[in-house]
Image 1 (cartoon, chains in turn cyan, purple):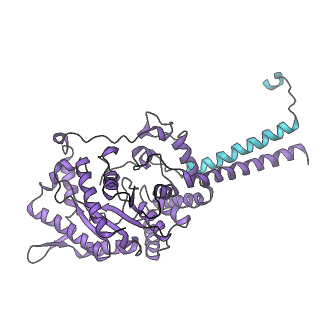
Image 2 (spheres, one colour):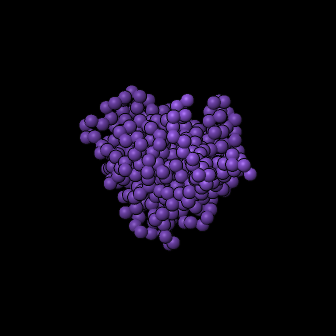
Image 3 (cartoon, rainbow over the protein chains, first blue to last red):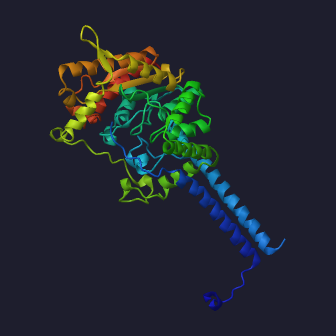
Length: 50
Length: 386
């Protein structure tokens, strides 16, 4: 595996936990965005005069 | 607690905080987010370009310039009242504001392809229920009548208004919508169910409010062919680009047979002749319009409503036979009377207009816009004295 050649950096525990929380925040916002995207119609509205 | 478990809980807490935070921001955006210097929902901030203004934005726009002592004039209807054919500087609703003066606040909430029962009508209803002085003005034509609050590109506004508790709970409208939903083919019914679910969620999560705000101010995240030259740019950078009308000699040349079929269709199956060869609105169509009005326009809004029935361009009307023209006139006159019989002011526009007042069969040029603004101002003054 390529990762074995990467330098082993010990990330402090509080930083790792903060990272997890920030990742969670991003996922939460992404869920919110997905609601918006799923609400948009699949077929575009093409205006035709009537 | 072990580190992996702590880590998992923090991830979960982050997801919850992110989602709730976005919803909170959306709720804030629903209170303040609206287009700058708003004149109308031009093509680049309309469903044509995947910009579906949330219902809350419509109310925010209506109240943005209003002060106590002023009367709100909320404009609904379709592309004709949206001002398609008029560059923004010549927009008819801007002229209407000038004619009416500072005692009125005119807000153009008309959408392309919308009906009088949709969007703006719901805003007028909601504000009237909350005690604001409101006049609702919309355009339509005899066959289109009131339309239905749901369906089409603007129908989502009904579901959003409903779930945000902005409407009066008018039973005939709700029953009619329920019945209509049952008549839909499965695919369309599913589409309506999704629209309804999305609107229910919007009331809680405000995802439309937040991401439309971001799309307007910062970055638009969905590609669309209408704005293909700058699909990701914030919509506030894209001005209202409605073009000037072409010279008169270049108008009305396309699709003449198709346009004439539409013009004839406005009255062909709607009228019958009596023994004196006079045309009248046929009984079934008369009843359909009566039902439409009674089921879609709530009674308390009717005395505050003005409906304008737009006639087609005289270029096409003059190609009709004398009998067809008489039939067209009778259908408009009888339809207008039915609106009035329901306590709704109604006028026909276009009877004395010329071809130069139109850019095509239906849409008004800047010249036509000036005329309709004068007509509407006059009708509003008759309807209401502040």
